[in-house]
Image 1 (cartoon, rainbow, N blue to C red):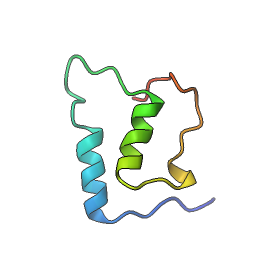
Image 2: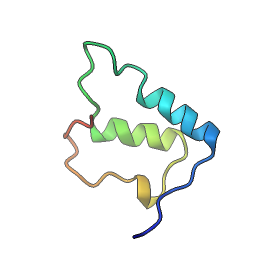
Image 3: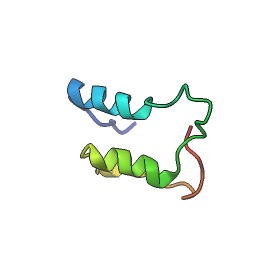
Length: 61
């Protein structure tokens, strides 16, 4: 099995804040692939590991 990515704790904390920011909102409907990619890109997570290869319009839970 190929190893995953290793992130510093501070980056994981920032990712978790952005990822779970509005999860408890009744209006939450998931994210599009583009929104997920934007979160990863904004945190410098641009390696192949972080690339989404599914349908562009599929919501990410």
